Structure formats: C-alpha cells, structure tokens
Length: 151
Image 1: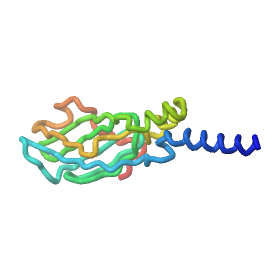
Image 2: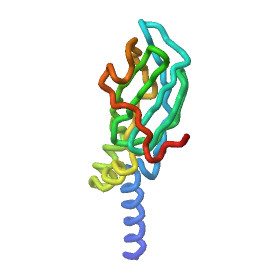
Image 3: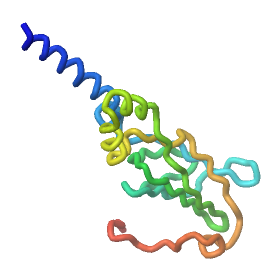
Image 4: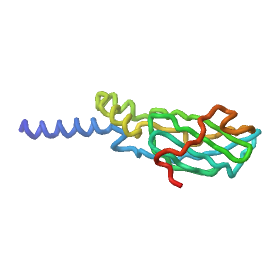
C-alpha cells in the first residue's frame, strides 16, 4: 500500500512542478503587429527589421511577424526614403513566473529564461517614425551584414 501512495504522491508532485514551467506549456514564439506612425498618422509600406538574440525577421507595416521569444530586448529598425525609426522593446515576464516560484521552487524559471517561453512582448508595436538623415543622424548602429545574413 505505501508504494501506491508514494506513486500517487510523486505523480501529484510532478504534475504540480511542471504546471509552472512555460517552456513545457507555452510557445517560444509570439506574433506581433507592427504599426508605423508619422505626425500622428499611420503610415503603411515601411520596411521594418525586428531583431533579438534568437533571430531576425522582416515585416512591412502595418503587418504581423512571428518572432522567437527572448529575455533580451527586441530591436525594431524601420526605414523608407527619408523616414526612419529605431527602438528597443523589452520583453516582460508573463504569469508563468508565479507557477515557477510556487511549484518548481525556481527551477522552471531558469529553464524559461533560457528558452524565452516565460516572456512576452506587447502584442502591438507602435513605432514612431522621424524624418531625417537616417541611421547616421540618429546614432543607431550602421547596418552591417551579419554572419547569418542571407542575400
């Protein structure tokens, strides 16, 4: 009888421990809507590159892109002719944090930080465009081909 009780207790503990881990139950991808605004008016047809430590994605605004979640900021670099925007959006920890603390005693938190699954970006990224010279004028890093660029 004690062995059956031990198995039931172990199964209950394992289920509770795994309940807090976003890596197991949440996606490590998120779809975001990118909108661009100039002089309080939405502007369409602006090319934007979204970058974090997990990858790089391209979207034409207004448009949606599915990005890999990360604990690192998402860099948004939008350009067209004489308008540009350069911004960083921080990922925020989602509700899985409390499940990780309560049920896994923090172990799930470590895993979620590695996969990014426990972190979310805002679902809509509204990018404020500026007129001007572009990257050199705004102090943004110049675009350099990265080792994983595809041409």
